[in-house]
Image 1 (tube, rainbow, N blue to C red):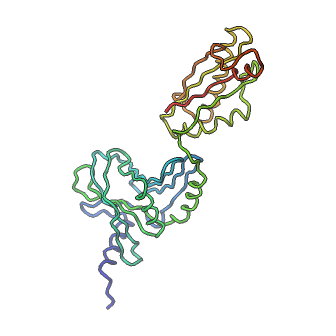
Image 2: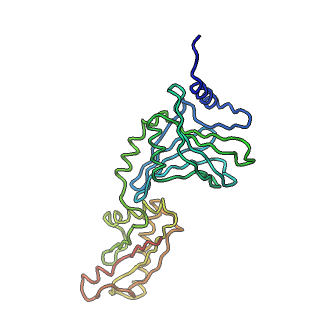
Image 3: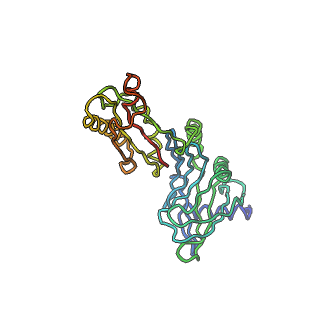
Length: 289
């Protein structure tokens, strides 16, 4: 009679339990089945995400933000009610030689993001998935601390998306929202409409404001010294509104924008020359962190 290696047999039972989503007494197991396992990439010039849905639990995702570092986040539909501790280890699939690696001891945070790790450990999780293993988190349940909870991130179909994720990281901007610079938008004489080149200048602010909800945008409108003072005040207001309307149309929350119209009262150059007047017809877009 053929005998089965004991460690392999234990792994086989472990994965059969996961795939069938069969919960033993005092044990909760979460892992997406081989058939349903999927990864997808969300990409932009400032943030790259590689996301894996975990059946009945939530998801695991790698996140890279421009100017930052790689991080791994475990998101739970049911918020953790208290802080705790978790063990992270890597398991080989049951069809391979039995292998289990202890990777780290982690803190569990309360809320819907119980696990968030960055730096070398995030890369270690990435490498384990590339090697075809399943990073698994083990902790006690949040209600009574009595049940053992196992959450596994499946490597099935991971290789199909990881290259696209790496390309996104390569193409990401080299700086983060803290380094977004103030911008000046200039206008023609008696004009308050944005040209294509002016809209392009606002692109980076639009990108970062969608990600960084703490980013505040202050608009200060100005006019040159020609014309009546009351008219110039209204003209500077129209210029502000043109910039604000564009930002909001691109998805910038209105609550992140404040404004102040100064008219001709704060010139940065002399109004005696055309060059000076051109520099005074502007909206200062000031970034506050």
